[in-house]
Amino acid sequence: MKPVRHQIITDDGSSTLRIEDLKETYHSRHGAVVESKFVYINKGFEYWLEKSPAKICRIMELGYGTGLMAYLTFLSSQNQKVASEYVSLEAFPLSDTEMEGLNYTQFFDKEKSLLSFNDFTILPWEKQHSVSSFFYLTKKEVKFENFVTSSKFDLIFYDAFGAHAQPELWSEECMLKCYNLLNDGGVWVSYCAKGSVRRGLEKAGFEVTRLPGPPGKREMLRAIKL
Ligand SMILES: C[S@@+](CC[C@H](N)C(=O)[O-])C[C@H]1O[C@@H](n2cnc3c(N)ncnc32)[C@H](O)[C@@H]1O
Image 1 (cartoon, rainbow, N blue to C red):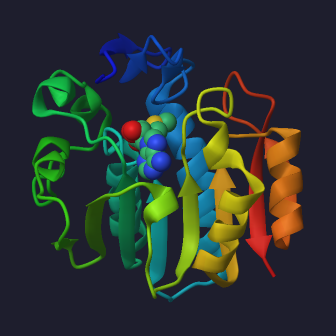
Image 2 (cartoon, protein in one colour; image 1 turned 90 degrees about the vertical axis):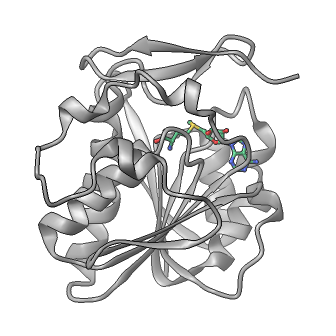
C-alpha cells in the first residue's frame, strides 16, 4: 500500500513531508533547509572541496525525496564554480501532487539565469541532465540495495529514513557497499549519529568522526575512506 505523506512546516519555515505510518519526516522538523545545508553542504560538499580543490566532485545521494538536497548542491556548485556530477537514488519517487506546495523556492536566491526549484523538479528520470556548466544531475528510480554501477563516487549523502523505520539501510552490509562505491579519500556523510552505524562504518574500513549536529541534534557522522 502506498504510504500517505503530508506536508508540514519545519522550524525554519521550510516545508517537508511526513509519513505517519513510519513516524518519519523527509527532513528535520527543526528546519528542512537549515539541516540539509548544515549536514550535506557544509559538512559534506564544502568539506570535500577544501580537501580536493579544482576537481570534479562525483556525488551519490541515497533518497532523492523532494530534491531539496540536490538543488542545494546545484546552487553550491554554481557559487563555488566547481563541477559536480550528482547521481540520486530513489526507491519511491514522489508524485507531482505530493511535490505541489513545497515552499522551497522562497529560500533560494532569485537568479534568473539558473533553473528554478520547480523546473529542476520536473527534469525526467533515468538520464543525465546538464543543469548548468557546473552541475550534472541523474535521478534514478532504484533501491540502494539493487544499485549497480562501475563508477565510483567522491561523496555519499546518506539520507535514508531513520534506523527504527528502515534498519536494513543502516546495516554493516550497506556501509560496506558505500565503502566500495567511494574513491580513496571519498567522504560519507549523514545526519545519523547512531553507535551501531558508526561501528558498521568502522568495520567497513572508514575513519569515522562524530561532529556537532544541526539544530536539534547533538551529533552527526562523517566518514572518510582512507
Ligand atoms: C529522509 S528522505 C530523503 C530526503 C531527500 N534527501 C530530500 O532532500 O528531500 C529518505 C528517502 O529515501 C527513499 N528511500 C527509502 N528506501 C530507499 C531505498 N531502499 N533505496 C533508495 N531510496 C530509498 C525514500 O523514499 C525517501 O525519499
